[in-house]
Length: 217
Image (cartoon, rainbow, N blue to C red):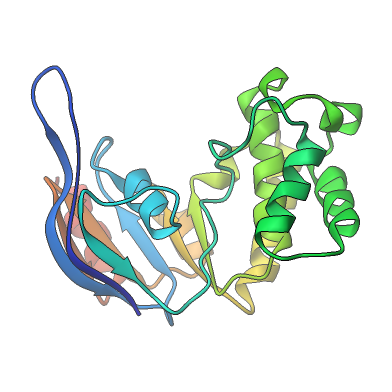
């Protein structure tokens, strides 16, 4: 299980403090493929970042014994002055991986960036950075992969390759996925739903019921 205990997350804005999640206590199963649903701005990506440990609640805690990826395709954790290759080596050190050359070669090949892989990250487009981030995410073995509209990255050929690799990972791992498309959620085997609305979270054992309520928002 992923356990949220009295979790609140908010941001300051010109119209006052905006709550993404407010006082939520609930469990998210780790033996199911989970869909996170909600309107634009409901906080789906923020929740995903907190589950991946790259953002934190204002109060409360999120705990689990499972190894969870950072959101696939998210490049905000890169060091901009370092190259794609150097960022790969840095992530390998964090995860205690010694054969970093094999890892960086896999990511280089997967990203299809060629020589641009050795440019500083800040010189790359958001799409190019997302390719590297996706490659680095998928090259490690996690119990749960976090997906945030990740298959929209890149051209059709790259999206197809990414989908095929995710399908392979899904055979041995679970996913938590943000998407507005019920067909995509079904494609990735999501059978459990979490609906975000006005700072609250509602869990559903049936993804179809979750999507039905989401469409009524």
